[in-house]
Length: 324
Image 1 (cartoon, helix red, strand yellow):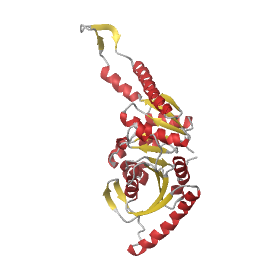
Image 2 (tube, helix red, strand yellow; image 1 turned 90 degrees about the vertical axis):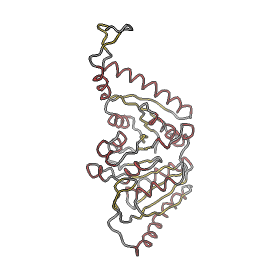
Image 3 (cartoon, rainbow, N blue to C red; image 1 turned 90 degrees about the horizontal axis):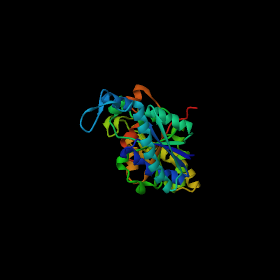
Image 4 (cartoon, helix red, strand yellow; image 1 turned 60 degrees about the vertical axis):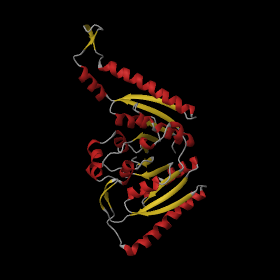
């Protein structure tokens, strides 16, 4: 399913740390990687504004008449050349790990260029770094990763580089694939790609569902809302048995496919419980669906997927619903 992976880089150590993880995943899946950098014209405008009116100076301090500072076009061309050089270095490292790679450099709004390139190259997956931010900061300011997630139906692998090691230590596939389910067709749509990843990497697959208890307040994942159809203490055991039976069907399918599989029923805040499940063992990846909602409600409340991305320090593969 995932045969072509787009990895945006911006020259920062924060972003490049995802290359090892993406390479490991590409290697076990037999996929190729496309590295992309985007030159943002707004950065060029800022440079021009801060240097406008300046003149080059000779070593003696006198003005060099007619030798104005570089034009915006000069800056863009130099930035493109530097980005190409940087990407080539990364591509050579990827190739040395046995994964086919190529590079691309574009100019424009980063999120728009990334999405455009992803569709033009018919990629199956975009892998991006993300930073942990508060719900309010993300709501007001957003991020390139967040904009990409909500601008395309292409699956997005998000990684928090602060917890990712150097390339040679992360260039293997995942050891555990965690699949949160909720009984809906949308949540179940990720089962097939999750099983493909587990099969390719020899990982254990864990199906989990969260029994939602009533909750309203602020937690580690931001503003949390519980379900409104709470059945009371008397019904919890029955609900757990029902969920266990539901998850057993996915365990059977996975074991029939030759996978090691198990299930876990947890209770509480969905996003927090998913994060705790993933944090128990290193080498875990979460594969989950996103409802793809937008607007003020998503910015203020957020979806479970949004909260997991903000809160977890494990790779999270978010698969949005298909839009066409």
